[in-house]
Image (cartoon, rainbow, N blue to C red):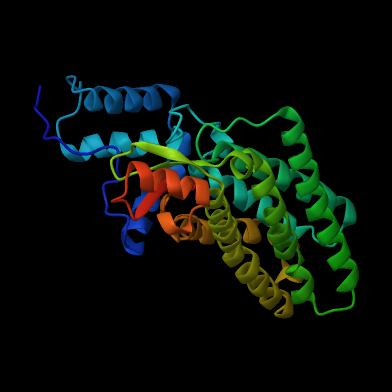
Amino acid sequence: MTSLPRVNLDEPRYDQSSYLNRAKHFLIVTNPLNAFATEEQLDRAARIVKDYRAGKPVEGISSVDELWAAKYLYDSAFHPDTGEKMLLVGRMSAQVPMNMTITGCMMTFYKSTPAVIFWQWFNQSFNAVVNYTNRSGSSPISQQQLLTSYCMATGGALVTALSLNRLVRNAPPLVGRLVPLAAVAAANCINIPLMRMQELQQGVTLIDEDGKELGQSCRAAKEGIAAVTFSRIMMATPGMVLTPVLMNSLEKRGFLKRVPWSNAPIQTLFCGFLLTFATPLCCALFSQKASISVDSLEEEVREKIRKERPELQVVYYNKGL
């Protein structure tokens, strides 16, 4: 058995202080191929990571690269705070195959009211699972809160989509094709904060550089959720803007009339191509281990930290994804 050098698996392999390194990190974590890993492969990756952290012999690993491959597979499927295996459709590695299908259908059938209702409902059902799965910490959420969040997000998306469809009925085709993006953006602004309401009410856990817990902060939760909301909207934007531009061009050239069956496949595959890059690049906009100045915290939390750790100027928290 090869003796492996000690590396810190509690931090990503690449320094997360730069955008390029965060992008490199998320390109691996959000790789769609990770979604096809078997339960046996995931459990093996978890066992390798836990054994290595505990200082135990690691079976079947002969290099640091293999160790990191197991760690990234582990990160793609297990929650960073709770260590629980996440629902498959809620994992970031499932974002590309799921979102390319949903987005392609939303933009293909945007003119039909029943189709708008169905796909906005389906999209928000999916988003609710993703938002809950990728929340910060082990914050519990009641069934009532889940139902309220789900209904309000779905309702907000439907009202936005149907209202805008009515307003742009006589507008150029390209404008109508952009309606789904407005609906998705509005729904994200509702869905994410509501699905993570416990964090807004009770705060997220603050830690120092060594991972020692320092308290809870609602202000940090607000910053983290705002960052996640922005990155999710940006994640959806390339596919929901560039795809309509492409389809509008094909329509003007008469291609869609000559090959009408190609509408949905082209939109879905093109969305998938864009999401493959947009997902990791937008996840990387903000570090998952976010920082916040002690001076920016609410007064009682700030005073507690200054009393116990007066040397600290910056603290950290998991903002979620």
